[in-house]
Length: 162
Ligand code: GDP
Ligand code: MG
Image 1: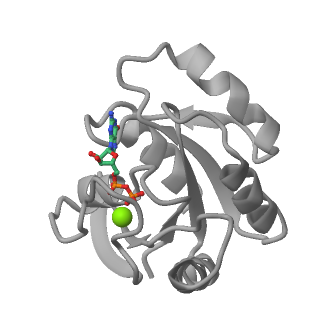
Image 2 (image 1 turned 135 degrees about the vertical axis):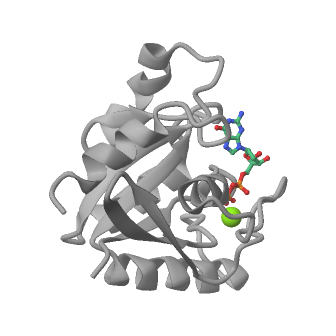
C-alpha cells in the first residue's frame, strides 16, 4: 500500500499547486480565488523508488458554514484516510486566525502532521517561518510549490519512515 499524504489548509494556500507538482498532473484545478476544489482529489506520485498517494482537498477556512462546511468535511475525511498530513499555510499572508483554528483541529488527531509554509519564493526563509512556530504543530517547513523550492527534500523526509 502506498503511504497516503493529505494536503490540508485554508483555501488559496497552494494545496492544488503542490498536488500538481507531486503528481505531475494538471488535474487539480489551480485557482486564483479560494475554494475551487470542493471535493477530495486523489493522485499518485513517486520519488526515487518510493510511490505515494496524495489527496487534495478544498480546504478548511476555519470558520465553517454552508459550502465551507462541506469543504471542511472533505478535509476531515482526507485526514482520516491519510498516513501523513501536510498542513499548509501561506508565508505571504502570514499567520492568520483561520490557521490557528485548523491547527486546533489537527492537534487532536493522531496523524503525523507536517507544517508546510508555502510561497516562500522571494522571501527570506528564516523570518518567513518565525510566526508559524506558535501554531504548536512543530517545525515549519518552507517551500514554494509553484517553483519546486524544497519540495523534493520535504517529501523525501516525509516518506522516510515508509
Ligand atoms: P489552494 O486553494 O490551496 O488549492 O491553492 P492553489 O494551489 O489554487 O493556489 C492559490 C494561488 O496561490 C494561485 O494563484 C497559485 O498560483 C498561488 N501559489 C501557489 N503556490 C505558490 C508559490 O509557491 N508561490 C507563489 N508566489 N504563489 C503560489
Ligand atoms: Mg485547490
